[in-house]
Image 1 (tube, rainbow, N blue to C red):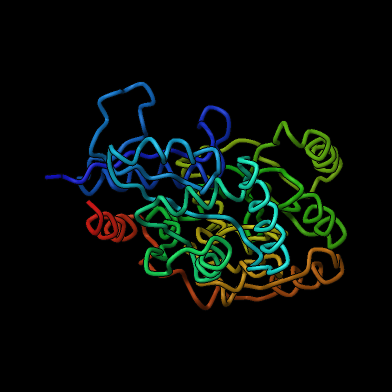
Image 2: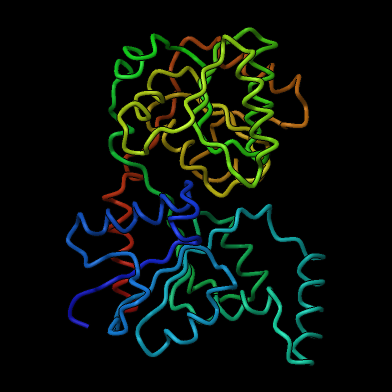
Length: 340
């Protein structure tokens, strides 16, 4: 193969879901293009696609058959992002037992398909050591085939001024939430805490049809809260979004489960403190110096928000430029070169 050529598949079709995960897939592709690589989303209908590296975002068991048929066309790379709470031996033994029984009667399971998919990959990319440990132990992967590579951050997130946002909304020093309006990320809890504290909050994110009832609850809360502003839809490349991070006092994202939340990386790039849920993902690099809180304890969340808001300085540790997309793309090319 004279020139490395890469084709990507996101976890879900971009026409159906376009959250942070799918955004990372698209941004990875664009960043590789920016440094001269032949990278693009997979054209499902092009039968001539041979000698490409196929890069799957997420070890979804539905890709197992694709991986099987792709074997003669080119190498396979998987970004194995799972949002794992860590390896749980009991869960592993149960999955292994049922998979073994299913194999005996020639029935596939989600566990067996995922394991087959991962073992077909030439390289598996994990975002942190926690994820790597999970995939090694859960699916018996060889650690030498796993590379750790963070999500990327647009360079604009490091330098966009707050004035773009403050000039339009006449607000600064607020508590910021960025993300889909879903229960896992706890935007309703954040809004309720800000109301009780009498603080100003800005929420940027869309409601999800699969959680319509939760979204309506959030919408009703916003309507009766003059101190809260909701911006339902803001394009990822809109300067207002990058500026919102710079204008905020703190990003509050007390999710009960995450992988490596990109919005937390972006907030750190802008130099503002970050509040995350007190779960294993929040202790991985580069989140060591973020504020952690148990979302189940409302009073604790209120205390942390209030204490961070009263800090009269920006975050002491700003996100390193190594998380910028150009650097991530170059590191990816190194990984690809080992298998192409």
